[in-house]
Length: 346
Image 1 (tube, one colour):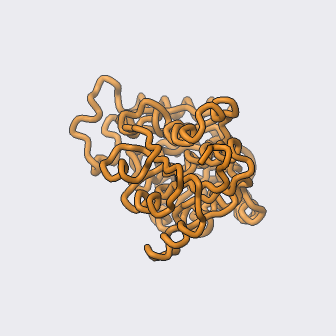
Image 2 (cartoon, one colour):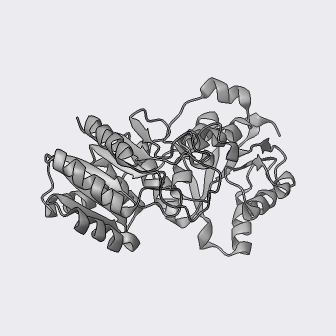
């Protein structure tokens, strides 16, 4: 099969929200390179809301909705010419083989991937030499490097629905929230290190006391509401609120879209803020595999990264998954965050 004969493309990205958001430029470039092709995306259920409004996607398969055999049958039925795995595990490797696509493209980093991808790309993403979005785009480029270079464009835009905007407007009206708005997401879902809840409380107290012209909204999933309300209680200031989202992730995006400035860690909501073009102050670790070089916001120049871990320390040494909070957070770091927020708020 010639590249010009490609009519059907499957692109798979089946992990977390932030990872999915850094894959949107790849979906866009696939469409730009193959405007007549039918493009199907494989995602997890919780990411469906983000991709369903992308105008250049034809079909979405939520892999959680199917048993293994049913999912394989859906993949076979699509009759893809190209299967691209932006994220790979044993399930996705098997789906690539099942697809019988002529071009099977994915990262070659594990033994089982060698047998799944006949157009594999050697990637050791843990080296973190570039942003995750560009690792993904390298796989799209593999289909036709010349066409890719000629048409290259970064597009990471997401689309809200009227319902999401209406839900946020009702919340704002109900709480009579006006003026400049700082939206904060303190919770990480285990994805990377951040400052503690207590440190967030003290930090937000100080920014509020300096900037009495702003309102602060702490966002969270409904499952984190208790923690958010504890932070709210400790801040103990008038114009501070909790927005606990139990619906579409685009409701959260709608709230972030109302922000003058967004504050958060290396997590999905920060990438939502990036895709919405917001001013961002982001708290990231200095660990190589979690550093902003790899997991920073894409296609947004209004981001100030704060890295509490000092560069002179060997951060990777003795690091464990249980090491959730920065031990090096101190008054200097707090002042840096406050200064960045003040400058961003204007």
